[in-house]
Image (cartoon, rainbow, N blue to C red; front, side, top):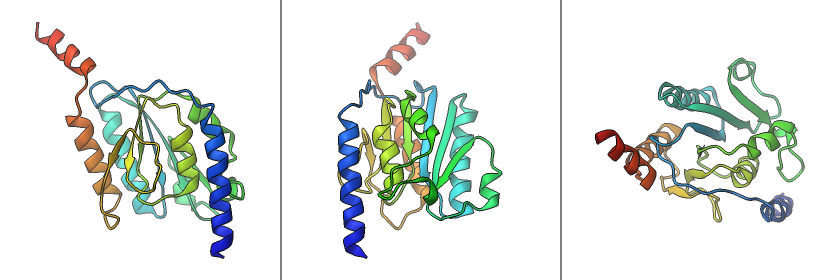
Length: 192
């Protein structure tokens, strides 16, 4: 089984590398002051994971940000209670090809949108989420150090034993203290 998994992984990485050649991104460092549009991606294995992603979405929405959530459920059938949540796009293992590329149309649309920040809450690599995070046109990408060659501009190194709430807390912390020239100019103009 391991040989087949390696073949799938290598084929997926080759296809991803080929797709990345045409990706054009306008990189810009955003923090929670400058960002207006945020995308959250991740893997949900349980209602608990889903609730944690939902609480981050709620926190950012309360800060007057437009937030879109896109999650992957690695099972064959998405549990009904996850489908009933509004404002969250979810897909499963039946909606990816043999090596893990998402096949649903809204993945391409999602990747083309230029979000200010893309937050990846994956703690371990799941190829469908890696595909989305890598091909996203988001200006600033944030995620954990969960695999070699990740596409993030800001990498949060957390212990694999930690869970989504801890990663989410660390990402919010660093996005709060992260400063960029635009935010400094904005603050100076409001003081004068």
